[in-house]
Image (cartoon, rainbow, N blue to C red):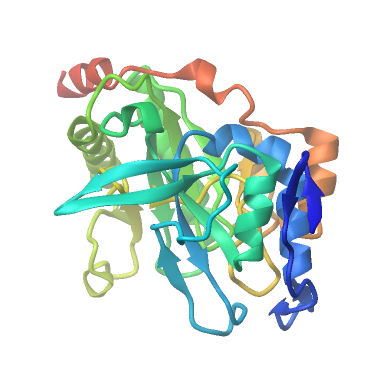
Length: 295
């Protein structure tokens, strides 16, 4: 047993290698989430979690798990979520021990809802995913800047994050008034304006139809869809970490989606803190943004 914030967590096989080309173990994954917990938890608290688990490490089979297992700690909060024909009981992370427990289950990346447990039908986040077809990260940065300009023109406050995979997420805090359908309509409208203004961008979901253009992916803005949260590890070589940025950091020629990793993120947080710490104070209105968009 190990103690995390006053809660005992049974930790097993700490030496199991999860990132074979980096020599990173399950213990390293647990330690990462323990160390970033105070920065990460404000961004995931109250949100249902879908666990992306890698029991054999990143080279092995992986699977998403939504339903919590039968043997689950009594101190771990859960939420019952409706689905077609029934319901699912999701984990909800709200303390350091929760992240440690999921990490011990070989959950390398917890994915979270864009809405909170008290209002699951009304999201408080909208995400535009800048998803490149190739390795041109300058186009990814240009897309993020273009999205930010469109969103600001609608009275919204955009925030940017490396995904730790290939692209950038532009995230908008919302006031939890509008339903998912309205938020998706808003995201589609912003993406359409971006595509109209720049031929490098597309909203075509089929990769074969993109012709090398960068996808502005808006389709996670729907009920029960999830996104990678800030400071989550990704199951890729180097153990990259999804990292919130200041907008000025896009001017860094050395920036990539995988720049920050399990080795460097902790020093960054100690030096810089969390650029998104006040994101909730900037919640905007979907309805007002849709009105401006229609005009």
